[in-house]
Length: 192
Length: 161
Image 1: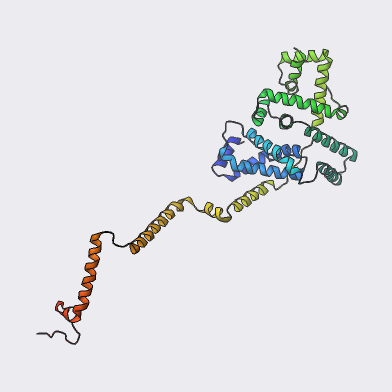
Image 2: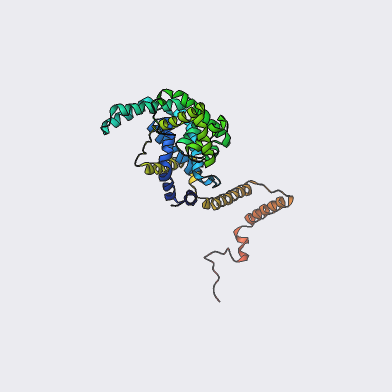
């Protein structure tokens, strides 16, 4: 498989098909990363398109000193943190989104309604708990937990030290445990 | 190791990055320390709970939608006066400017020549001399200029022989 750097070099030389390849490779990841900030599909789609448009515009400024994915997450994080608060107000609230999702799932598949409602409720609770974290704590946890970035990559993305990332993750995790305590009691774990 | 050290190793423990010595030290510690055992247990539960946040799938046409947006943006940026100037190819700019500059200089020069009066005494004298010649020619008239052979009448053409 062609490396990200090779694709970017092709994009720099004017090859649009290479950028389409970048889209196919990262669109889903960024969409879900954004979705965890907004909890709204429509907003997430718009923001993800905007992120890739920014990447396309500024790709000539990309220097392959950092991994492309780190650079991409940096752009995504900045855009999410600065625009989500204002843009989210224009769209339906997150609760509406949860209810829409429940409705569509119930219509399309004959799954246990209680189970679906429970999962939607959990999702809403996680989203609300995440909203109580500071920007850095939230981003650090999302990048580590969901995007599987290393501490070093998260530090580059958030422009801070690895030590600071560890602190953000630790504090954020403690806050989440505190907020989600009632739900944690119901979680079963096999073995440590 | 102290409790803080053990807690700091949670992520490496979770992602199985610990060496065999560290791993056995952690296991030994959480086996005997309720606080650290609780910390590891709650973090494991949190991690499992966070897995419930399911992913969404992108729309099928996200690639074409992206390129449509790019086209739309470029189209909008090429509208208006600024867009017109942006649209001009660089290769045409320099020759066009050179031609425009040349024409401007030519027009300015022609305007200056037509409006300026003689600037030196010599020019003034030449002007007076030319006016005098003009007057003399008017006075001598047609007849006096015949000697030059150019102003003869058609009826009095010189006969051959």
